[in-house]
Length: 83
Image 1 (cartoon, rainbow, N blue to C red):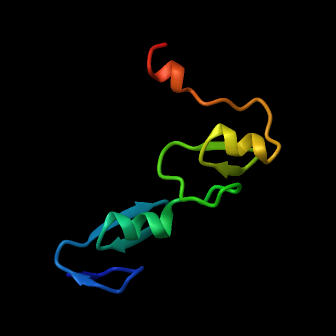
Image 2: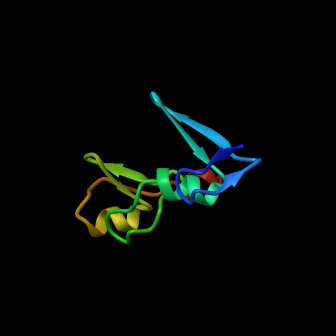
Image 3: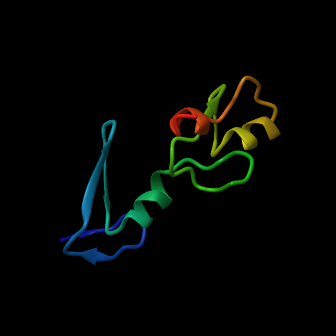
């Protein structure tokens, strides 16, 4: 068993996430997301999907990026849906 670095739970089904040179231990995806997912610079939600990056800043969607002044950003929903 290993102790989750976010909540401290010592859980038999804990897991490791290797990111760069670091190894993180979590007991749930919720804790992994809490520690590792970037935060949208506009609405402050955790970015769990692809998100949008503009000039080193991270946003959950094109709407939030545009609201913060990013240009040339668009969501690819119509492309992904084959429209």
